[in-house]
Image 1 (tube, each protein chain N blue to C red):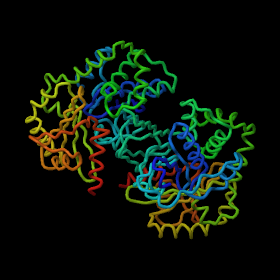
Image 2 (tube, rainbow over the protein chains, first blue to last red; image 1 turned 180 degrees about the vertical axis):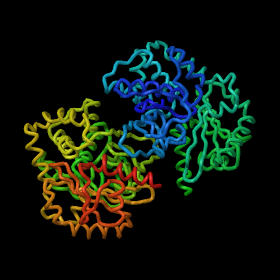
Image 3 (tube, one colour; image 1 turned 120 degrees about the vertical axis):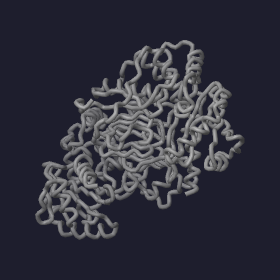
Image 4 (cartoon, rainbow over the protein chains, first blue to last red; image 1 turned 30 degrees about the horizontal axis):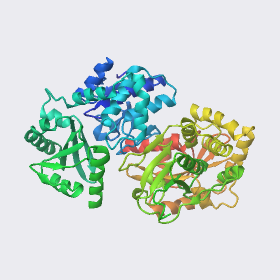
Length: 317
Length: 317
């Protein structure tokens, strides 16, 4: 990479989900078609859902990000913008593009850049708009990547993050992706998402995990989306052990790990310590029993969990 | 305003120029056409160029922002994103939209928002794209507002901030604006810009002035674009006095005030003290004589002055 000075590195967030991986692939393709020398990389292992999607379209995953990316390298961020969710040393890179659907965190640049943020359910919805606005042909594989990401992020248009734009773009993509039976495709996606065979509890905890700064506190918030809640709950003691270790290792004020039932849209959150119990009670009005707090139908970290934490820590300060 | 809880306030930056004012007007119109209850306001007095443009289209300026906008009001920012360039108490408002062509400063939000940043010469270029992407009709007045902003910000496509997109959008807007003789229109714009009759030196200093944080230092950077450099230089001693007062008043590390010759694309910058002299020498390789440093063809604050300051203070830290 050292000699390709003008190459733009395109990355989704750490602990990548389907949206993070497919968005990096599709946006790199978009940039190349706009004349930019772009290449997608990933910041972690694929989950089984993403593997299923890539197998469906018969495409390779992006390469893992190499160590020691040179300072000053041009970087395009997709599906995230906060440095702690991104590559090492992001602050020493030159961020030139961001396409995202999250709140803005600690993003700053020294020069004007391309930013495209919309409060929609999925980065893929925004990427589809970019293709349409620029009159680019979309092939079946690209449409399948994008539609899979939308179905995954919006839990088949059931998550409260879902917007009309996601639904409309989903309808636009479906015939191009040639997925006739959407329900059956979603079932396969969700089963793949729930398939944790061969995954250690440590890995499950970090499959969809992000850290956030709330005022002066550092918190980790993880989500385990599954069709089989009981199977996840069997690992409760192991989760508690992993969570305690992670808190110590990174000096975190707390970690919330939510087991999300993607069929019934319910959230049971694992509560490992006193800080988390206080937050469960005061920010979510949820009692804790046997290290579990019932967060009800709050299935979206972005739309429900993180804003509640942010509001809570802001009024405390 | 207190009872219009869902009204989105649309504002350009303080010390507004033509782009800041017209962008607020046009984006408020765009949002209304997208079903959002939006109203444009301004954060300061109009300059003579903007007055000329509004007279051309026979439109009123946006109202001055009222005092005491309630906390939590929804705000759309155009042509800026840094809180110190924006309305009072921005950090207590709910920023929901930003359309801008500057670097990202201290912008953070607690929820996902609409952001549209492109590294082009003018906010109006991005706004024109928004109209086209959403298939909105554009009338002659709107096209005139947008084209005037582009001509003003890019100094008739001569500034180094000018991109191909600005030129293409300019060509698209010209027939809709029905401005047949562009050169003659630009001359009138530039004459209006240069007309400082009745403007105190204090006002001239702040007509196009922004403050920036570079590491731990606070700097003010002002620009006086003119067809008549000598006339501006006659006020040098008054500028020096005003600059000294402003530095004391706001505890600034320095102020650079650039007199920009918009016909010949040259920059003579007023240097009031030791800090500024050091910066002129070390960041711009410019000698100082009689309180004036020749910054050569660096006519763009955004593309040339601020990045040079940022690079300089970053390597110092």
